[in-house]
Length: 251
Length: 200
Image (cartoon, each protein chain N blue to C red):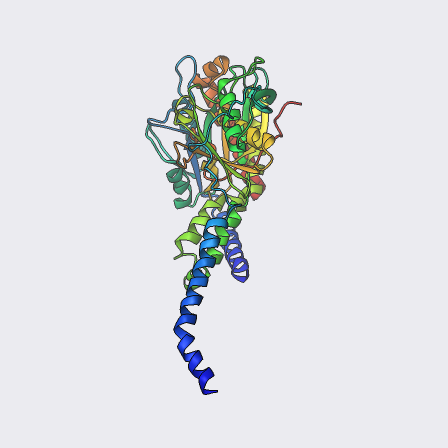
């Protein structure tokens, strides 16, 4: 049991280190993630619009806004129509030591009437899976003790990155709130509010991270909005404003 | 004294043989009569019969509650359904999920894409149900976040709500772990049920 606490302590220490590090670099790099891409089109609209094209268009507009008015470095997880794995997307954020991560999506539901905008942050769907993983290390404690340094322990690092977002839930929730209130103010769509979900893309990101669902591409009315330059620009502007308010709060 | 000693010496091989015979006898008895309570349990979905054997009477039925979508709100709606009962809860769980794919009888919408087959449900002793679907569950629908959350939680809620031993659910596709169904919801971890968006 002792080694369990040691492991937990090491994890907490490492995560708090990540959190502290992120605050110092918070004002340098924003990573924008245009959802889907390449063979993976995402949701499809009745008029043939694809989620991957709309997310890229909005992301490029948001990038331009941030670079023009804030002077931060903006990194896109993709800047054209290519496949990028979810793992590589969060790795892009972590490798660039992102201060903020924004994943942009267009929503899809089976019922065609579903409509509106919402902003997600990660839910900690904590089952005893985490406990099981820690128990594995507990049972292999001799192995762990011989290389307790997280920088060299692959298992430990895996757990660490799996849980990277856990240290930022509170900040992510605040970011989601601010982005969502701006979307509500600017889009004229139904406000679906902020929500938590166990999204893969958010779990491995080591900084405040949200996923924006601008509107429903599965709803014919909203599909046409999403396909229009003017609406895309308003989405980008709203996210930009929410982000700016979040950064002001950090200062 | 000497005779006793000799007698003992003489009988030593006999004693060893007798002892061995006794041990063999005991082992044989244990082998043929012991372990009567341990029946080999067939794995769910293996060659076990999919429907209970008909005994001439009406087959035993079980009422299950399924979770469907509706046009006009974002909630999951309950609908009850009669399915054949037994022999195992895993068999029943497979039938309940198949009904979920088949769709609503009350005008609701299935959250799972048409063509999806339930390959197997396995219920482990620790309360983990593993639901394995054909690839159609991932390929026959271009999921958005909302559709994906609906599909996952309709499956999870249906299993946990109806089958008492099930506490959490892991979703597999074609017998293997898959990252997501359509790029959003992380399938690498087991899900607890979420009834927060079930219509009252």
